[in-house]
Length: 190
Image 1 (cartoon, rainbow, N blue to C red):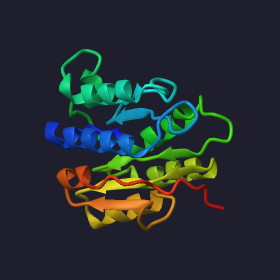
Image 2 (cartoon, helix red, strand yellow):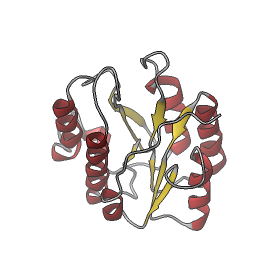
Image 3 (cartoon, rainbow, N blue to C red):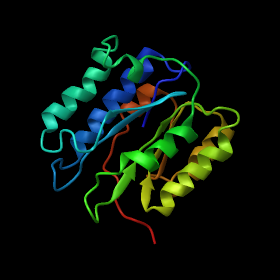
C-alpha cells in the first residue's frame, strides 16, 4: 500500500516507489513464488497493480512500478500517485481485505506492507480494526511508518503483525525508507 495524500510530496512518493522496487528485487518473483500487487490510497483507494499481473515478468513489474512516478501525469497514473486528499488507511485496509488477495494461490502466504505517513484523526480505531480483520485472515502485516507522531507510531505498531521489527518499522523520513528494504520473515503466526 502506497500513500499519496495531500501531506505527501512528489519526492516522498518517489521514495516509496524506489523502496517498493528494492523490495521486489529481494524476492524470487514468479507465478509459483512471490507475486506483487500495489494499492495506492488517499481518501480514494485504487489498485495500481493486481497480483495476477506480471506474475512471470519481474522486468515488466518493475517497469510498471517505476512508471507510477515517471509518468505521474499520465491519465493512467494520475489518480495513483498525485498527492491529494486525506489519508484513509482504514478504508485502504478494508479494500485490501476484500479485494487484493482474491486471486492468491491456495495455501500461499499473504503479506501486506502498508506505508503510512499520516492517519486521519478519526482513523486510528478503524485502522487498527481493519488490520485486525486482515490478521484474522492470516495476512501478515509489515507496517512501515514514516515521519510520524508518537501516537501515530503506536497505532501503526498495533496494526503490524507484531509491534517489533521487522513487523513494524519506523523511518525518520522517506529518504531513509528508501534505504531500508530487507527480506521479511514470511511466516503465518499461530
